[in-house]
Image (cartoon, rainbow, N blue to C red):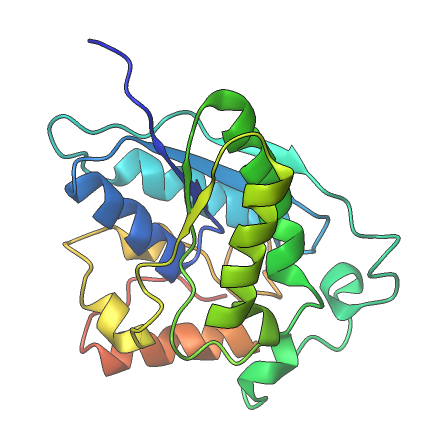
Length: 221
């Protein structure tokens, strides 16, 4: 089979990025997933969920998922004392979405995958940001400016794809085509490899299944 370029995907293992992975494959793309290791407390559980989802996802004919690329970006010097690294005072189920914001998250997480794509001949990097993301680094203005910076700073053009940018969480959930979403992972206070069932992200996850009128097969500790 002749080589063809893949679409890079910043994959967290959560509902949105897993659904985007499935959609890119359905559209006939090869997908190169990236996971950026930053040292957050839920990292191992998240990577486990992502790998499990990929293993159980039925692949459309002619498409494939390339081997997961792990990139390291330790944030202990930058996020020293932050709840994401200490596991203390983790935002609970009754906190607003803004409570789980990580400073500069999208700028930090995209830089290494973008450079990897540039070095390996990939021209597109996909992210699963939603219309409802309340953070300043999830806006159209931010990503337009970021893409311009990458065009100037890298040897070849890197296009940032955000196909879910105008969709709500429920609308994205309804794009799932019998994907094994119970294997995805979106908890910030895991109990071993299980969702805690009590944090902000677990509450968002449960609500997403309810809003989409879908059965939630997630195992909550």
